[in-house]
Length: 320
Picture 1 (cartoon, rainbow, N blue to C red):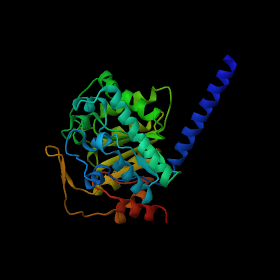
Picture 2 (cartoon, rainbow, N blue to C red):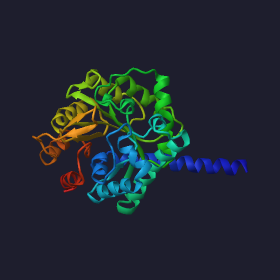
Picture 3 (tube, one colour):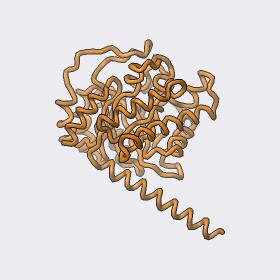
Picture 4 (spheres, rainbow, N blue to C red):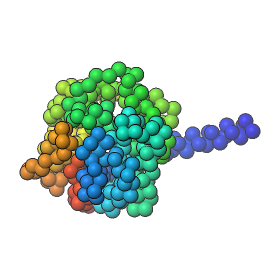
């Protein structure tokens, strides 16, 4: 029995390694990422202007989450990011959801994305989404990085959620909108220390084309990430389209990692009302995606305020 169990464990381990390797190979390809979750949920009547943001739908409108994922896969997306950016144990606790229920909701976020993937793009990937501690603060800190926690505090906040996303069957982890260099270092260690390895990317929240949101020179962050083992990609998201080209160029010159970009169109976020204000857009995906590809980006989608039609446009450019 011992040797039979050992053999089964070895087979499982080899299967896991092959799966990780196959996902990492796909992340080297030109792929289409999905677009905004919250924007589409709002259109479907989901409340998003509170501390849970789009994670509200995990509690009371799971069908709408499935619908948004389905719409993006139908628009051509190769990768869906789960509706778990703002879904964390501490935030759920504030609205009366206990620990085990919170983990079940995070797991459900993965299951909904997987179901939409299986229904509309079986070759697609599901990226379990991890948002920064700043998102939990619900005061716009994901765009400033103005918080200071110890590694133990970051571990307590992130580790169990990451494990849940992995155990629920995510193909990879998307660490989104990271504004704080100390938190970035902590999350990399947390993921790299897990026994069940999984591909993941780190996507940055930037102050401008040269600076992480917390003021750290972007060059320093990119060089550091490029030296770490285990990372499968580096990205930038939820900044205006105009910032992307110089950042992609900098990343391409400083690292060989796959480069992921998913900007917002340039609209303005108010952390007090938790709403967006539209502004005239000087650049479009149609204009900029070819430039991002030329500069070295290979995984491209949209963040807040983007819609399935934007993903259709990106798909048309990347796949033709």
